[in-house]
Image 1: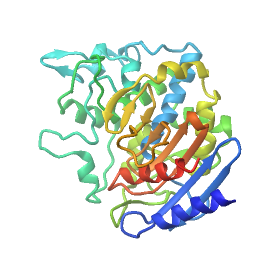
Image 2 (image 1 turned 90 degrees about the vertical axis):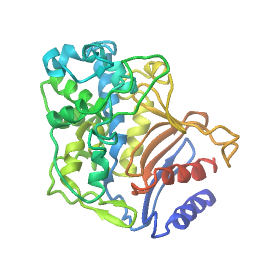
Image 3 (image 1 turned 90 degrees about the horizontal axis):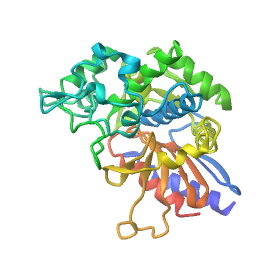
Image 4 (image 1 turned 180 degrees about the vertical axis):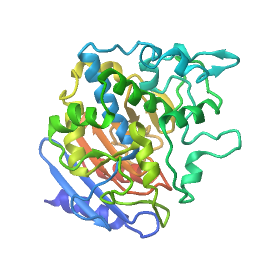
Length: 344
């Protein structure tokens, strides 16, 4: 009970009605189970999990791998076609589009630009446009065209190189649809959601749907339902901290794919401090010299630009899921995670 009181106190003190207006959090290990809310979050209120969606795509790809439907080293042209991909990855005059594999996409080692955050030829990113509350829809084909208009960062699989790219997971979503001859929404339901009973989780696809909590950018409430529908495989899922706790424990507990796969998924490349990209997952680890919490364990899972997160701390068998629902400062969720993890 004492630890629950401490966690709730951390949540309440984190609400400043300037950066953080609301928090939803679930924490669980073998002896402890907590779900709490603060600020403007209601009990079990759904929110956009943003890039934590990528864990769902990873789970599905690894499931298909276990079924022997695909291998991670398959070229993506096998599923999407050479003509469709032509011109997607031209680096120093060479078209590497047919050299990209599923593993490259999962691990952000494809070298492809990020259609969302990288700047286009006009010097502006799609992210900056949306943060002006300028909502718009964009199709998968438009995303590919946006990506083709941005310079790739390096050839696919270049040793020691990784660049975080939402384009990678848009491509993975389309590969999943091609393999299953079904919509991504139906595949997510079949392989993930229905398997573990996540009753308040779904792929956002209806811009009239007002169930999920609106995102915040600083003190502005963002109304961008068309864009949220478009993020799809790289960031379009809605969930709750309780449902995400079920998911993250299932993900690392072998419910979706053989747990032996995790060993090769935890091969890390730096993307931006303090995050490293593995194969379909990311790692949050601050060296002790930089951390105010000398006992802070490594966290593996994923975070989202929305302030959402779902992580597992193997050293402590500790799971954390939730959101601070703030786009402006990605460090806010990690500061919260450090405070909570340090209690265990």
